[in-house]
Structures are given as structure tokens and as C-alpha cells.
Length: 332
Picture 1: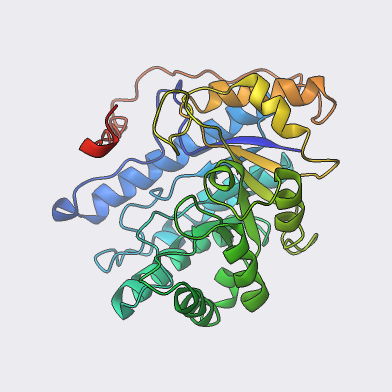
Picture 2: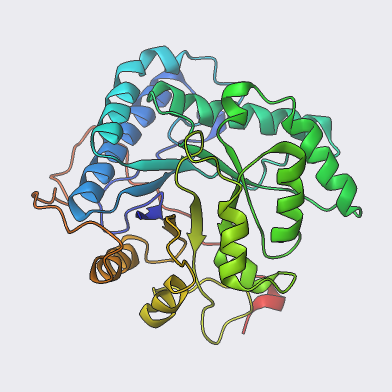
């Protein structure tokens, strides 16, 4: 069982999401940003390996405007060696990686233009995994999409578009049950139509379900993964933030809740992605709990790379992620 966290190491002094404004696009800026992003990604992976955190969700912005029409630069060729080196490191250290394309990837949209751009984004992100030389166990995680007033039609539209995906992309796509529109039961129906594996989210299931107990839900979702083509089933783990609106993720791992969740596995092997605000800090505590319970390998006996390095005057500044605006209705 592997533990991971998504995209950003909060304690590290670099970003793998350096970018720039579309209006200032140039090949020079693109090359500088991608170079810095790949260096930081490698640093994060090396730090994770030293801690025994062997699951990592990479950020979608490694190549700025990677699926945009403006980006005609052959970055796949220019950075082929760098991507291959990262892939070799991932394989040599038994890491598991994935991408989670942003919410604008909506395969079941009634808009042909949105569908077209969604497929382009999946092709872009899948191509990075291909350049790394990774097999189909490295996944692209998406949601079913919008409801558009008719659930069955929305599911059927996803299935129809899924059938048109390039084979290399289709082999990587997994669908996550969400907390508002498409619960596990709908995702299982989609699996019956398409064969797409279901990436189970325990917190979403707690928010939206048809009464399936957690252990049964885990069993149903993991059964949709092929043991060799798809690998060990992936899942997202989080819990409710106490005193906050329903559906708000906790800022910190609640050890007792995590231990309680693990009792539902009944021997299932899963790779757990922690969707928790303090990211690597919670991941370190979670993997320590797994080791205590004999569910994860002992901590590796290798030096931990530094979280900070002397500043590189040529490196782009660390990208500051904008704070999400909180709707008035969601304020306490």
C-alpha cells in the first residue's frame, strides 16, 4: 500500500507549476518554465522516495498551455531526455504517479468545443506519461462531468465520447465518484458501459451515496480495476473538516479517523492519495500509521534531500497559488 499527496510539497522552495500569462507567450518563456518545473518535480520525487511516500499526483501545469493552440513548440522532442530520466527514476524506485486534469475537462458536455478541448487536455497529460515511458498503471483521473438535467443521458454521452478517445488515453482514464452529482452507483453503471475503472473517494462517498457501507463500496470500486492493465486500485482519502460546511476537506489528517477507515479494507491493497490541505505533513503521519500496522514497508534508510537550496538567479519565482474565493453562502 502506497501513500501520496497531490502536486505541491508545501515545505519545498520550488514549484513544478511555473507559468506565465497567455498574452506573454514565447518559446523562450516556455522553455524556461518547463525546465524549472521538471527540475522541481524531480526534487519532489526524490524527497518523497526518501520518506517512503511512493504515490504522487503530478500537477497538470508542467508544460504551460500544454494543450492550447498557441503552443506549437515541439516540447515533446526538446524535453524528451528529461521526461525519460524522470520516468526511469519513477520505475527504478517503484513510484506510482498520476494526473488529475482540472474541472474544465468535461467529456459529457453537450458542447462539441468543450469536448474537443477536454480530449486535447487528456492527450497532452497522457503524452507526458508516455514520454516518461510509464505503463497504463499511471492514470488520468477525471469526473463524470455535468448532469445537464438528465442523468442517464449525461452518462451515455460520457460513454459515447470515451469510445472515441485515443487508445493510449483510454488506457489511462479513471473516473472518480463525486460528492454532488454522480455517486458510486452511477460510476459503476458507467463502468458497465465502458470498462473504465472507478477511483474511489471515501469522503465523496460519505457525502453522496445510496446507502452502501464503506467496506462494500471499497470492494465494488476496486473490482473495476484490472490487476495488470490498471495495477493496484487508486483511491482518494480525506475527511470532513470539523465545524465547516458539509464537503469541506480537513486541513490536517485526523489520525483516529484514518485508523478507523483502514479497518474497512479487509485485506484490500490500495494506493491512497491524501486530499488534505497540509499535504506532505499528513502523508508522513499516514505512512507512519501504515508502518505501525504492517501495511507499508519500513522507512527507507537513505539520506533525505534538502527542502531548500541556495537560490538560482535564473530560476522563475515560485508560483503563488491564488486563494479561492469563498461564496457568501459558504461562509460560516
